[in-house]
Length: 262
Image 1 (tube, helix red, strand yellow):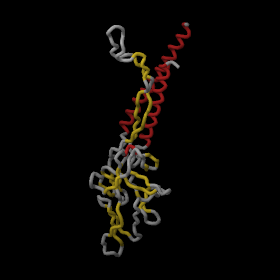
Image 2 (image 1 turned 180 degrees about the vertical axis):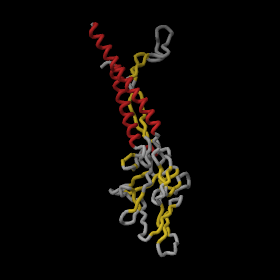
Image 3 (image 1 turned 30 degrees about the horizontal axis):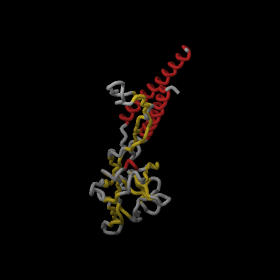
Image 4 (image 1 turned 45 degrees about the vertical axis):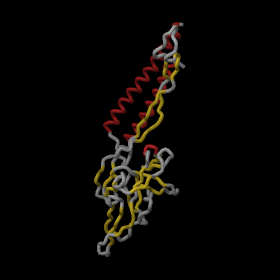
């Protein structure tokens, strides 16, 4: 295959992958707790036909040599865990983490997952669960005759019960968990992540202390996707894709002219 054709093909594949990443970001622009993803590129191997510094006859050396690139590839996608805007909802079970950290959830298979989405509800047993029914870990159960629920900055959950002289009663704590490398978490869908060797082990903490984000009641963290930035990125990606198609077309024309001439 002509080198320019192959190089153009790799460019088309890379831009197609980047466009898929951008489209997913835009699709989740209103997803609570969603974190923007970006594609990371690297150039492929080079064909060194003349090595830099090689002898060029006599006592002279080649200052740069002759190195031909073979294209580009997407080597990884990186999730950016910058904090999204906080929105007031006035719902007592809506909570956000103002800073670093994740909520811990117990999955149906017994595994632990992590999320930044603080849209919680009560299930039929009074447990605090997310919209998919996954309960907080450790489990927090709200009594049936509860009048109000208060969640402190450190995650402490207190309730007042009817007929209890409005004395607050502590029923549990929303724990905050962090990772050395949050970008290494595995996205599982449903707004949850799983621990991997790349993320490191979870670090337990208390909200608002020792660098962990404070728990904010009646607030939600919005997606950190900027629609304007994604649209600009989409336009540049589209233009790059078009230029690579022109490379493939030009290389094809060159080969056609060569075959016709010979």
